Amino acid sequence: MNTTVKNWYIVAVMDDQQLVGEVLYGIVQDDQTYRFYDGDYVTTSRIVLMDFKTRQIITASNSHYQLTGSGKRAIIDLDDFELLRKGFSPEQIRALNHVSSIVH
Image (cartoon, rainbow, N blue to C red; front, side):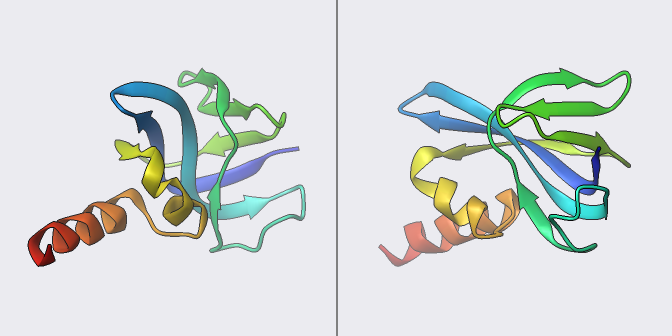
């Protein structure tokens, strides 16, 4: 059973220049597991297998994701991971951090 995602990112989560792990963030296009509605965002557990040839990702929780369309890579700080889990895209997190640095 797969969940198909579009507009996806492979997100490297960093803590003081150390890679904590990589997760998948994307928009659900189709979900055969019945956990998500089409159009929902998903942030996965840590990626354990990426096969770009078949466009498949398997996570630490043994969930399977099929990638459609083109995706991007992003890096976020561990401090921002909760924003990602709440549905903010890596680009939105970057914009929030930029505004925050201007204000402070």
